[in-house]
Image (cartoon, rainbow, N blue to C red; front, side, top):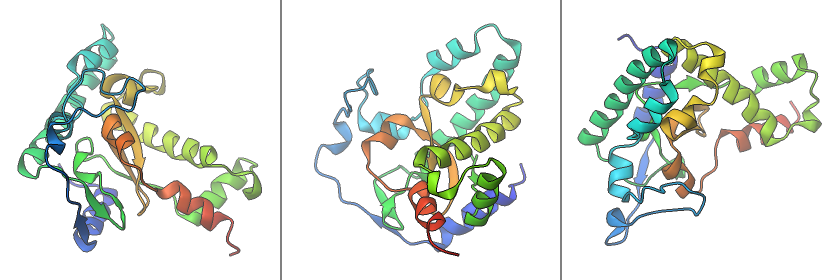
Amino acid sequence: MMMTADQQAFAAYLRQTQRTIEAVPTGYWDEIPSNGYGINSERRTRRHLQSRPYDYPELLEAWAGADPEKRQAAELIRQDIEVTHRRLAQHPWSPTLLQGEVDFSDLRLGEFVLRLPSIAEYRELLSRQGVRVSDVTPRTIRDINYALVETALCARYHLSARAGRNFIGNALNGVIHEDLAGFAYIVPHNTHDEYKHRGYVEYVLRMLTTPA
């Protein structure tokens, strides 16, 4: 399949940006992480979570149910999950820093990646929505980003907006990650929550309040 312009830009960014590998303690991969909010209630080790993310066939099956639209989408989603698993079999994930923040890129769902708006584009979007920059919060920016990602994913999987609502978490135990370079993609919820990091939203808020 031909790469999109966003995928090409993302691949170039990864090639050109130096990564720093973090040391992990003995026994790290056999630990069972949990944040106390029900994430990883299955009590899977880090080795399992980070080598076979989105490995929740029961969630995907329950989400699809008997709905023909969702069942067709589920087949495409399974293909993307397999792409992720093959990538990780070739290049096992380990905590690595990219621009000083945890790099989740190898854990992303399939090859899906979306370039988020530039600062100028956010200003235009906010102006069209009648939102003053002084009133912008992290939630404001995330709502814009999440809507863009969900729309792109629905197009990828041939889902209507109704059928695709909230499927990232419900069907995949995934979450949208916005990296510092302004790319968004789906990553495993449990791993994303375990590693504290800054993302694009903090950068956008800072730049929006900086005089042009």
